[in-house]
Length: 501
Image (tube, rainbow, N blue to C red; front, side, top):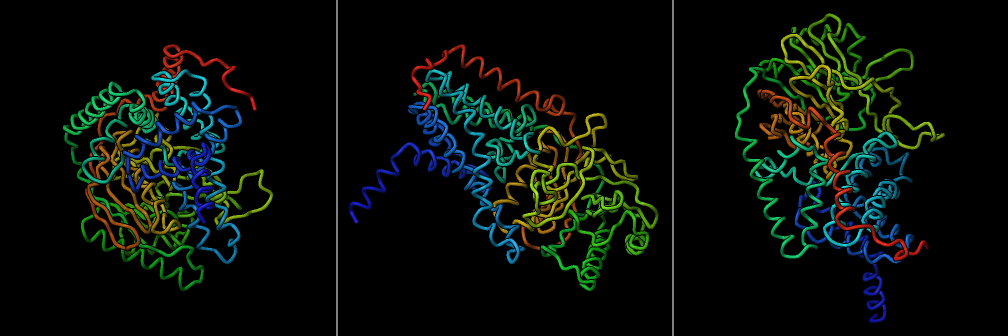
């Protein structure tokens, strides 16, 4: 037994094991745990491991293992949708999370390699931070994009602390906040001066947040109702079940309007009927809701075999007054990539929309819709030619149960409100539904795994933020500048110090 313990201790002390364990630990900083101080240990430890690598192969393995640990823990909830159809997809349960983490982990090799070829010190930290964000930007666009669990989301802590520190997103977005997070976390590597600089920077960050929050948000005079029916997933397609679902939405909508709402929002794909093409459904709905605007998550037919995950807007029994088709579809969940010959996971086959749009609905300010995980795509959520006055995010996070997934998704939604300076109404089938003001503050909410109607005032918009005007150009330029400054200040490490295998 003593030999076994000694062997395990030796293995845990290897660079590969330490990289994996520090990656696991880093996930504690992500929502919903938000244990930010862990990064003060994990990021410096990762940089030390990078500097100690003796070959390109070892460097790549260390970097990949850190990313694998980070994403294995941070994305554990990805198995939840498979469990809803476990009789069919049981074989995927042990592989879903490791396979996704396996793929995403490769992005960690980019900043690790850039950091290794930079001499130790401040320059290496600057290069590492810049290259990490470049890697995140690539991740946002490559293979349809998956910018989930960016380190900048760590600051979206529920409550006053998070409200203050997420204001920086109005200037530099979540990618810029990731940059700032890495720089702060790496300061212990620079000794007492580094720690002092970190404290000053963190104080300035908080000071900016407080100053930014000092301007009040004007009211709009509009009251919205967010319907949270908490329908089970996957739902039954029996006629009686679909009828009960429809009647439930009707009764909840009528109650919301009776409570003083000007408009009603249904979550993603909530309607069991095709509202855009089903005149009978619109007439039945109008019988209980009158001509009030209903922004309904509904499947829409764009043509034969052309199914769209949409937001359909009705006002009475007449034709729909507008619609929006989701354009960022979930790979494997909403479509199967062309290079996969067979369908291997639950979910429908949908066609993508054309991109962000602004809907002009009589009686409401112009609105920019987001469906499901479109809310994670910073800088890509607003029609720049027709800026909306508010955002609506309809989603169905019931697929992910009572896990970190819905909470991570919610943290992203708060940051989008700050970045754009726009209020965001978030309607989720099983929660978290909330009204979020243009500073990312939650003014009203309904928690996970409960049903109810949230009636809340729509806050006003702020003038376009700096990030809203320039978007992803800001973190991209910041990252490139940091890499250049880091290389110029520290110099490049001699290539002979690293073997190629």
